[in-house]
Image 1 (cartoon, rainbow, N blue to C red):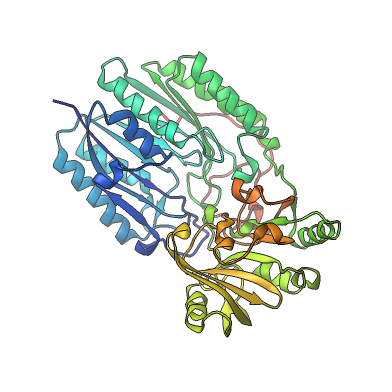
Image 2: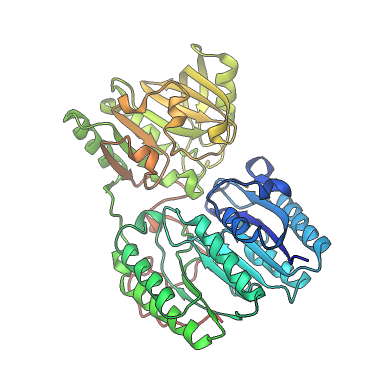
Length: 491
């Protein structure tokens, strides 16, 4: 009889500075056989592809959401308990393999991965548990004590999710075959770096990840991961981490972690913005200069309110600056701004219909601390209801004082130029496009003739000193400048 392995996952980056509570309407859940039919390049698919031919797979659930605020406790507990009940009913199990993020948080509970892994360990104290993690995972001691092995992505943007799932599954297979007894080591590196400072094809991360791969391959380490943490979460564990897994060799696990931790720390000052980056008003000046020289489209990232980094997507400060700047608000064709999360305004536009003018109070429905609404008249240019490219959110394109603004009924990523196209906008023909994003995704990068990041306001503020950290462990670089780092092992 084939051995039984439970699979599943929870995947979310939770921004504690974002006041939105991620609830049932924001979360997409797959169950049972639907998980086994996934046809994607994510980690759970890598796990399934590696295990399905040799083992009986017991799918629990896979829940995910666009990065946002912390999860609603009640709905999380409902999903967690469903996963645990499925595991209980499937006992006895031979193994568990999960695809988790690592920086998911729940209101009044804290780290979701710590909670769910700890409860699984209570149910199955002797069942091996192996887990894939996002590169931006955050570790806790309880997480480490509640699983047998972890491995994180090695690329950002993440193009090795599938391969990381495969890696986690291979560790489980090695364990079940009897030749692998995992030993882990982990070191916290007191460093904050955003994704915009740590793409893996750019120094210092390109250099660091080459060292990680080299160490993993040549030193006999089963898995070696650099986890950059999630800087927009004010928690007791927010930081970067190095994590290793070896076959029974604690000394080797420790030395691999120590080598990479020291290597990262030596390069801490190199974690800087490597794309063109400006304060908001300067970004508009530079964009206008480029447009006047015939170099466009210019794409500007409204980085402080980036929903794919967990921000609220409704901060209006940068849009207000654009509307007040006649150089940018009088472009022909108009600047297009993608986009504001405002269910009320989206519904009003749909109700009024294309060609109508509506009186609206736009934005700041969720984060009313960082900005205030824009009170204005808006002409409805286009509507697209339940667009599949944005998790079936409704979209509307509004003309506001010479600027075309995309508004959405759901909290969604704003990186895809197709969102403009389905509303009748040809982004290639616009002179300036603003997206609520950090580093440009390939789809929008391909359109731009020049791109830059504006250091705007919001829950994903790229200037960490502008965020009100209260719980983060100190000292931490760069908030506290330089200090002596004395590595210590978490296990």
